[in-house]
Image 1 (tube, helix red, strand yellow):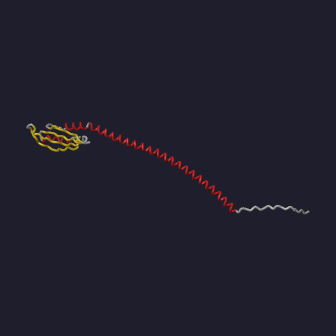
Image 2 (spheres, rainbow, N blue to C red):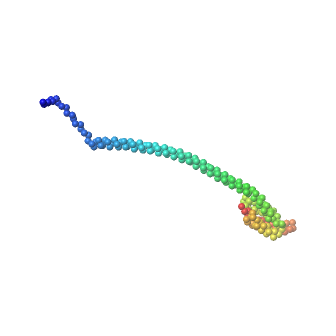
Length: 181
């Protein structure tokens, strides 16, 4: 038996297929957008971490600058202390120098010579002495005694003048003596 269907049959429409290039273009665009968002996120994270690093470095620099200032202040105070200590030590050494010079000058004094005046100059590094002697030989002996002394480095006889005092002939002379330091 043959059956015939007289009802109209609905034909299904074939769906139009989207071309592959359009699908590929959409996929590439979506992938590109995702990659751009990832790169943007990555760079903003790097920027934030770098800003934190810069802030941290600025804090360290400020802290180190205060330490440097403290060190320079300490070095300045130390230098002041050292210079003051050196001055005090020098004064302590030179405190006894006039006594030593006077003792040595008088110890080398031969008979017939006496000291009229004595002056210490240049913090005790130089002695000017005015003396009187009975004879010129006494003057030479005194100068030689001073030259042989361990305390003095140079002895200069500036002048020696013969004069009359109360009817006696005497020699007035002056010396410049350099003290060893």
